[in-house]
Length: 229
Image (cartoon, rainbow, N blue to C red):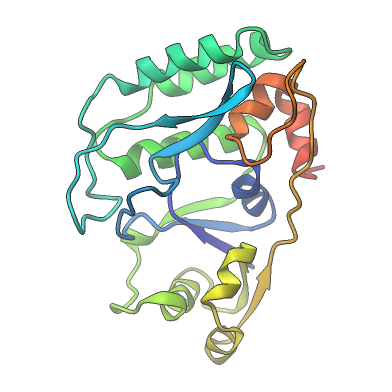
């Protein structure tokens, strides 16, 4: 059993979905504290030959979890659709991709940041054929632990018979393999290297939302970028 855990980011980059493509269970860390300036409510997209931020408007509430963070404007999905249409209408796979994106954004629940982002991530994952079991950390009992100790507790809750925790490479800065080994689990890091893809006449830019790959290449080429058979 391979488990991955991550905050419910907004329409995230390919590396986020790469981890999802290589796990059996994906846990949204929706009860983590919202961090200003993170990718939780913003992502970069391509627009007029450069990378720009697409940001969800939220109410600032110091110390609030992602689950409890609310939007300051309810019409942001429609405004973001206008931005995406204007940014990608000339992209090679726009006609294939737009109906799917339009449907997802128009049906996004807006009662909280976590609800919206979990919905969008799961819908995009389904669209490209990724089918891990999705769970929310807020529904699990983890006994008030923090850091990698909490991740080990999440592992116990979702994979009691053992397995592997799949982490992004950034986790090596604060995670200890001993913590997981003591709990009976293996810690493994992804080996994702961002693939380049054609973006029409624009240069390739690493780290953009997966939407950029979808609009330029479509579903099958995006799946290939994730090495999903």
